[in-house]
Length: 185
Image: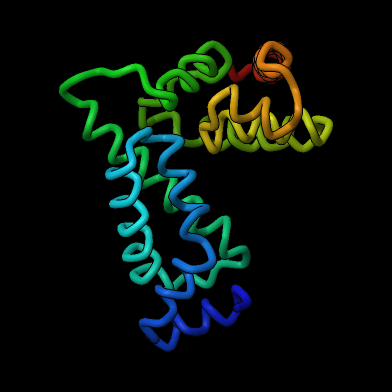
């Protein structure tokens, strides 16, 4: 079934839209959740929450790219669940490791007064990513958006783990340099 048909089902409040979404994007959502959480049960619960959140979001939203829409919801819910789970005990999961890798080139944005600067940083990062060669961009996104493990990224692209690590480090250095030149670091 096409995404536009599924979205129309949501607008009609047809409960079959949830089943169609699960059939088409269940594995996709589970992979995103599991890459962040690293736990089968939490990932399954997160995916179920995604369906509820999608049901509550459409309408009023009419996503132009449905897969990106539910992928973003999945990632947000998984990160939220991870934060709750690790509030008491700090673990060494893939999410924390990926953020730690990015820490030196992305400024801390806890301060709410920096909202406009944060939007500018996001814009500059998007511009930076668009200018990268496709493979380099895809490796970066797999690691830092989908939170894929380095080994998984290496397998996906047919590279060695050391090549992926080197590529990521060079890309982070370029990103840091770009943000520094822009006066954002």
